[in-house]
Length: 337
Image (cartoon, rainbow, N blue to C red):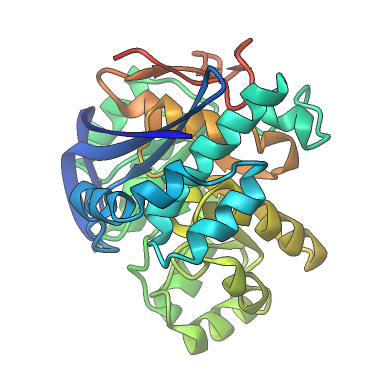
């Protein structure tokens, strides 16, 4: 099996701001695994919050290049266990795991959702994310990208006022992501007012480790609560069940499709809603997420829509939010450059 690593700097259409950071570009690592005339592609983006850079991922993967290229590849699950045994970060494992799944589907001549026994004729609509900015700029972004569901990034001193002003400009469904910025009592009050403003749910209102605050909030919140930073890996799903109504799985954070599939299964057993989110990936990462669509309640896979220029072809999200699955097998990815 041949391994190739590529670095891309993805340029965003607009500065993307959340409660703790802003950026205009996104470094991303594309892993390419080739076998028997087929190539699978996987992606992981850099992330300052988790101290992940392209260089740190590259160094980890290059450190076991010989082992990867000599690995007797049979299926993605066996390859994932092999990667875990080498103590790579989940971000590095994700890029390789996604590539392995894409490769496997291409070798089997089937898209992944079909290999998993799911039907892609029904799927949740992705939201479109509006990052923090001046209210005028946030409204401008909505007007530029009319969409049925917006995820609004919050975490300021005037969050409610922002949502009120945005609501005046659209009847679209709203979801709110506070990115750990609120305190429990603040979140309880915000939920009441945000419900009146047509907000569907709140994502990660409190700090990831504020479990006592979450216990209080869960008792009094009038809106569903979705875990993000509090639910990173498989082991977190069961703990979140007592504090949240659902989880947002990020492939980069959990280590790829292999653990994500197990997290989805566990969440459903615990009667949790399941969402999969993105980390401003290109179409490489978004196409992998799309394979999970039939299994999800919610999805946030707008990463490629936020880019000035994409680097790949694969799953396409049209202006009406309809998803077009490619004829290519696996995740359906082809690099354009």
